[in-house]
Length: 153
Image (cartoon, rainbow, N blue to C red; front, side):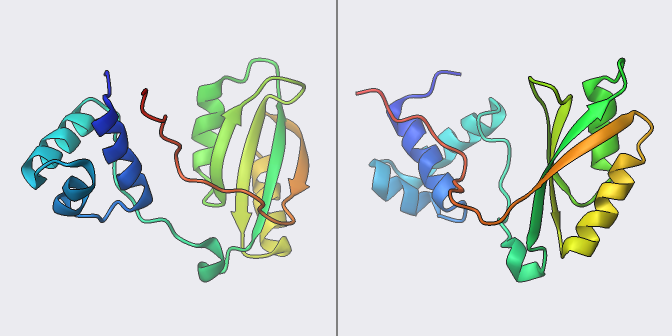
């Protein structure tokens, strides 16, 4: 879908505050609330906007320990198998196939080191995992919401 500068501004405003009203957004992009709603509906139906969600502060719910885990898998493990397996673990907040030595990179979040260790043990028990290499996050330096391309001038 081709997005114009107004669409890009609307998406950027929704990324910043998904609860903003169509009227509030309209006042910032010089459109009426119904015109903004039509654009948002079109952006949703075309798949640009996949949904709206609440962003939870992990520390507020007690999940303050994070790690990135490289998975090394048996020779014929498919991305679909990794997807199915990682979705079984509530501590997994992201999983990616990657280039390099590892077959996948998994982002875990847990309450503490003991909880992280339990999650790692369960992940290592998946039948296709041959080994793992973990990196515990000490601090988050940069974390941004989805980036929206700047409008072409």
